[in-house]
Length: 200
View (cartoon, rainbow, N blue to C red):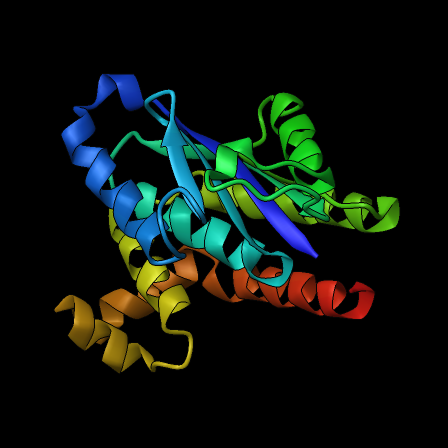
């Protein structure tokens, strides 16, 4: 089971591309190789092909990376399914995962994060879960986003270690994680991962 993330940036035209492009590329390069794993197209849109289980965690990591820039956000649609045709470029590959991702992206209205899987019961649960999660994530301040990104990237590190990595006080890290809903978002990610394991 694979996942395809189709996404674009919100408000990117109001901000110099040099500011956000390096952040976006840094987030994508941590996932895999350009073109075979991910591709940026139409300026501020991008597509990623990855294992289904990793998709939600990577989507939240990308959002946390982008939200470190004031007034910038990202719309993300995750499609789950098979890949029936692999090309040397992600955007030329095809299969149900790509179809689900494309359809989910086109249906995005006010939401900034959606998942479409082959299972309608799971889709219903994820829709409610992500609608609630984005009520917090959409309003992350840049300092919060920086902390939550680092903690998500290194979930086994203690707050004091995250504070050292970011050259911040532990009390500031603790405050940012609490205010950004880190524990609740981590629970959402773990729920998603367990559901994918059960169904694949």
